[in-house]
Amino acid sequence: MVLPREPEPPPILRLSGISKAFGPLRANDGISLELARGEVLALLGENGAGKSTLVSILFGHYVADAGTIEVDGRPLPPGQPKAALAAGIGMVHQHFTLADNLSVLDNVMLGTEPLWQPFSRRAAARAQLLDAAQRFGLHVAPDARVADLSVGERQRVEILKALVSFGRKRGARILILDEPTAVLTPQESESLFATLAQMVAQGLAIIFISHKLDEVLRVSNRIAVLRAGKLVAVLPAAGASKAALAGAMVGRSIAPPVKRRHVPGAVVCELPASGLALRAGEVLAIAGVAGNGQQALAEVLCGEGAGGVLFDGRTLAPSPRAFVAAGIARIPEDRHAVGVVGELPLWENAVLERYASPAFARGGVIRRGPARAFAQGLIERFDVRGGGLETPVRSLSGGNMQKLILGRALSAGTPKLIVANQPTWGLDIGAVAYVHQQLLDACAAGAALLLISEDLDEIFAMADRIAVIHHGRLGPARATADWTLGEIGLAMAGSGAGWG
Image 1 (cartoon, rainbow, N blue to C red):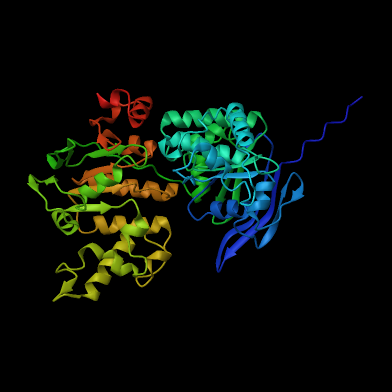
Image 2 (image 1 turned 135 degrees about the vertical axis):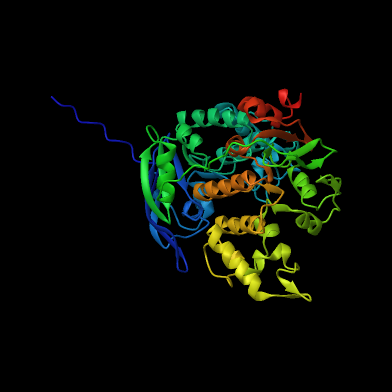
């Protein structure tokens, strides 16, 4: 006698035929996905593949043009974040949304009580917070001020805000994590992974968005890949490879950057106040958690700080124009606000740092012919896509905008020094490989590269030497081979051998 099989439980989340267009751009094109209880589903894709649009529809920020969403078999009303929260959908954004001047408990309670309520239920909220913190291993002090917490502790508070059901019928049962390890030390990332394991063991379902393929393979059960708005692959994480995932994301194989062997040359730039020295042909990387002084260091080395920079043995005047004229190429962290002028056309942005040079101006008037010819050559050499010379730069994708900035920095000949601050932030895997190769080629031609990055994979792949910055203090630079991941994580937290 054959016993009947137990029916499989229905998925906690079902997306059916989700489509969304913005004018001629089809951001989502008939996407159907399911998520089971206690499952981690990773969502991969290049910039512009449709990931952000899809989760924005799920969380009620956008309304789909077509398709339906069901939670526990019940339709989810479109375009209503409150309905998503009520259904148990929580989201932890890459950039935290906490009030620094308030306590942990106040942040969790924020917006959960009506203004007309004559009393506050702080005791009940505290009990729920402590219960969730214990169950999921998210230990925080309820009365601690958020401004005094580490980055990892702040992330725990963000997750607890989603999990605690105070003020709602239920806490999150479906949790969306957007680049959750982007600003964490390796030790904090390990703590997060342990927390995720506890969550899924208790039935929580997680959508995990990350560009770090090692992490995706480690934490997920299944992986969904989007490309150009379409769902192109859904596969189990077990047995998947980084190369296969990268190929699915971009639709082609990606050659890893080639780092050529070289002997560092003479010192080209020094910052005596911090002990920083860069040699021709080498990559010196600065690691650290966001907000520890990286931006100030980059500004000083780009001519925007108080001075004190020795370049080729002489002190440079603290002026961006003087630094550019001396042969220092700048790739700023904020490509939109600092790297380009969005309303100007592509050709003007291409000559923005040297528009007054004799090559592009005469008598104070820009020579449009040479400037446009230079811009066209830059477009072709660096494969800048998304429009012609008259296209406003604001309409370019992040990857193509970064190619433009990179091309502007490298097209006037090999610079003596490149200051690259988060050069691949937010870029897809194909654009990252391209940017890395261009920077390594410039170093092979004799440029010194200061790489400021929060991505340790990028740092270990690119750097000859690594120094860690913490609370504005720069530790000693050591050969990359002399660092371990654990040591660099401790140094990023302000302790360990990285300061000896």
